Length: 547
Ligand code: ARG
Image 1 (cartoon, helix red, strand yellow):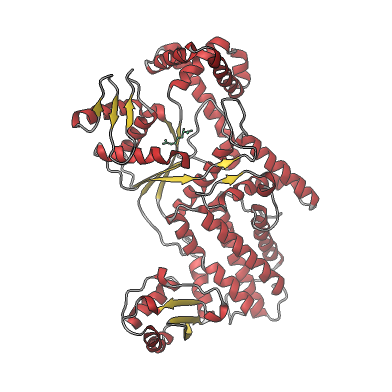
Image 2: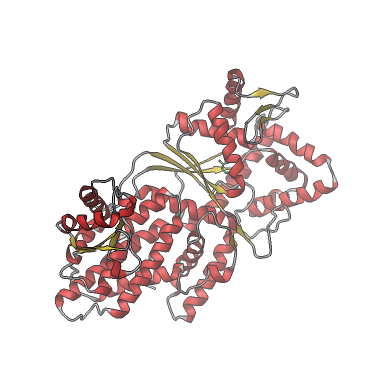
């Protein structure tokens, strides 16, 4: 059982109150003990007095060395270090590393780029957050399915088919399909500025795709396939796997059926021009089918929601999508309720955009920083840095990409990040390379020693500080999962690495004062290695053997 839980139970008994592990605090100042509890929150009478009375029974508890009353009614706990260390070691050495396991079928959608366009830096942030979450959700025990729901339907693909027929080149498409599609996209929008009829042409071709007309459908299919192949290279470099790749095109039919039922039920309103819409009380109304009979982005999301919740039986249906779609998802979920779909466990995991210092970006004008450029730049910078430090260049890819991921993950997902190469690629302090380096430092200590680590004897202050930080790992992972916030884990690992480095500087490990101390310190180093190996993997950052 976890330490906080044990203390909470002991407090519950001693104070005859409801105390949960989340009520236990970790004091900032060491002289206030290892853990603290404010009796003020539960006291019926004088909290200070109730605290005094609880001291004796609490001190009889296992692992509790001493209890002090402070301030208006704080109980400060000092633990039996030796026993605490034993308990934590045992916990962290379990396969779950002490993380309380959850269950439930969880669908996590992330990335979901549009086809026929390269991913840009914004997708980098999405991918980093989404992949970290899929790893973390698996580790806390959920039965996870990750889905990449491609934007592969709508008028824009009619436009592309038109542009390909009008300005395209089979040869260029074969050579570099993504470049060519992207050029055509930009070209179409340039031409459309001059010629209003082009929009109409695009719609016509979209209709042909929708009707399954051979030429249109074949081209669309090729665009889609080539896009997936192109995106796969970016995912490969980022170390990301999806359990399934779907797309808006896979739910078009479902959307039509769903809308029909909705009309029958009276949940959807037919407008005089033949379009369909849903009216809300507090949100702007939405059109779910256009007058020409085509479905919309939102209606396809509704069909997908129904599929995941009703047909596939997911308990959780989570979407990692930028904050600019917050209203969209509120409308999707409310529309789902209206249509009688069970929307429990549906959640938009929103994140702030990753911006360029020179302002927004427009793919219409071809002005985007591609995800692959970001990866290249990061790796280049990593190479430069590794050269400077006289280190092996083999790890440059892992270090560069890890650096870019960490820079994104350490910031709470709701915050906007203004893109800044210098910060992303900083190798000092709170950074990906710093974490990777601290982790390899532990490995090299362990490699140099021929002794086995063992958690024995009373921990000295510097050792105890590291152990306490290590002991927070399971709780941090749980909170990270609960709040869908990889920044929690990222910041924790950074803090832990700092603690490890100061331990390393103040405590001699190999050749310590005596054999017992040496074995105990080796064990601490081992635990640090385990926690950071696991933690980095959970963030999608590669732990290295050496650096
Ligand atoms: N393809 C969309 C875009 O690039 C994002 C899709 C988000 N997911 C969803 N289920 N609507 O903006």
